[in-house]
Length: 162
Length: 162
DNA sequence: TGAAATGCGGATAATAACTATCCGCTTTGT
DNA sequence: ACAAAGCGGATAGTTATTATCCGCATTTCA
Ligand code: SF4
Ligand code: SF4
Image 1 (spheres, each protein chain N blue to C red):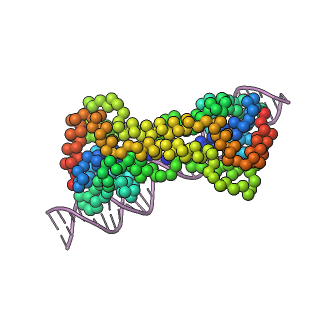
Image 2: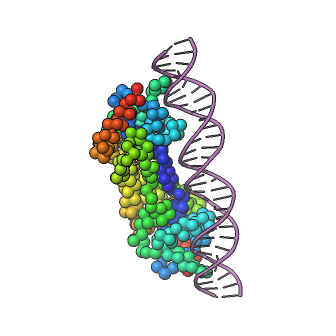
Image 3: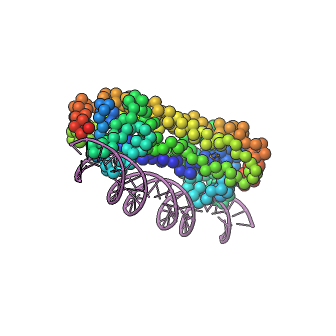
């Protein structure tokens, strides 16, 4: 069970978009080039982010993407769910219904005990992701990365932003 | 990103095996019939459980499986990781290395900020699963299921256990 | 002792999911 | 009007999951 690679791409793209001034935006082409990933496929992830309301799209020539809200109001969960979906990672096939001892008229009123535990774990995963926002990521990157790399990257991005 | 169906099967099988007296065991054939799943494929999941030390295998005719430890010492995480593996659900492709601004001699000493957040969430998921054991599951099932169904299922199982 | 039942591991398909690319369309700045 | 950019659908290529089959070793029981 692996998250799709688009999740990593989307998170990195949001980190980059977080570096932009509020009224600037960056094209999918630039984001793909910066991260070394195929532009066409990255576009699909960006479209998912757009549909989910995580980023705002500017159409037309010199169009592109910017964060739809301030970085402090966008969590990792918002980005991950935009790309990966909101369904639980555990899906119950209800195999308890196959129990040969079960009467045919049995009413499965509540979800099974196994599923509840798995869904709780899924909720814990999402809660953890919801607890970190893009502003926090930016702060961490500021600590992690060298001043030179940060400055160079910001320049690279701003040179291509509209 | 979905967990494989074998996870559900394995958890249910462990719940059933938890109903057995300590010195009895149940065949893959019986477990497959009880849950209405293909025996050959379920066997693969049971083999994973066996390799992970979650269940104990008895070979030969009239062989089968029993829990390797008391139900209170086997967590959901033990079962899930046996089937699904222990790798994080987020795998970092290290796309930061593609940053055109990054000097070639840059040393990526520590994992990236994005990956750390995703790994933390993965850890939260596993911690949640580790917090529930098979004895707790049995107790919940006792509350959830009707006395008739429990008794009938236990009889069905014990009739086929060796 | 031999036949049958059982688990194990490898090989092999069938199906689904993910990854990737392409194309026509609309939008919009110049 | 034209070119650059995003959008949505269509289409392959690749990988992962699901499922089945077979030969082998082990063990029970007749
Ligand atoms: S016990 Fe829960 S997970 Fe298992 S089949 Fe029933 S509802 Fe699904
Ligand atoms: S930022 Fe983290 S997740 Fe992204 S490529 Fe770098 S190491 Fe991987």
